[in-house]
Length: 242
Ligand code: SAM
Image 1 (tube, rainbow, N blue to C red):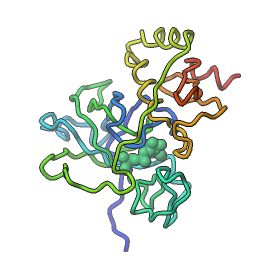
Image 2: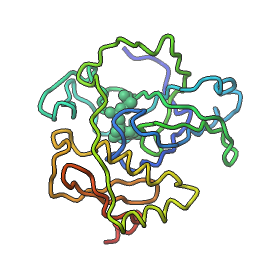
Image 3: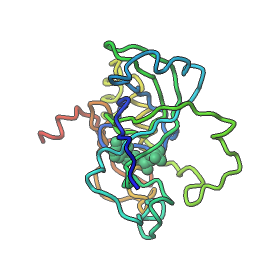
Image 4: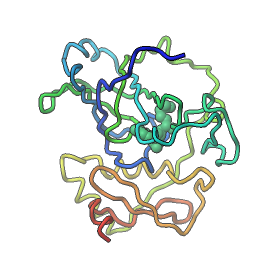
């Protein structure tokens, strides 16, 4: 069955996450700040009038980076180590028939940036530039179900410890002086504490060097005794050139 309505973006979400690897696997795991910028013809204060009275909002969005890869009836959830199959509708897979994702995020307020109405948010699990197709208030009496069963994802993932080499810490503190990324050090710690590697590697050492892209920086890190060790924080272009 098809329907006449065609989805269009009502907003774009801006986040520090510049590539998929390293983005938290669900909202609320890392309290990174970002904002949702309304786009025309929705870029009007009237469209969000009254939204400040809610502490959280739902973002319905498009997994736009994965649309081209299509979808399959079954997927292998990372939580199960990539070995077992589950139905696409039994998972939060990013490869879905209509490519729709949904996340609850904290709402901090409404601001205007360069003539655009923006919602300041935190805790999102979205790639920078993700198209948002709808925004709705989170309503605790109905949306929060305290005795709900969480299936294979009942508990939040375990976290690992994160440390820095002395040079990497100095680099991170230096870049954190910019008002564009004041939370840089705590953001790196929170992102790597999730151990972004495939789930079957969880907290186990391997010899590989890894990279996550936050803001305009590349964070280089490796595993060290079951923990993440940050070895360098460098401008994003530097890695591309090397
Ligand atoms: N909370 C949402 C949901 O349940 O629909 C998203 C969960 S999904 C497992 C979260 C992952 O989606 C992130 O870790 C990131 O790798 C990926 N992701 C985020 N934004 C994306 C985008 N615009 N296109 C493709 N993948 C994206």
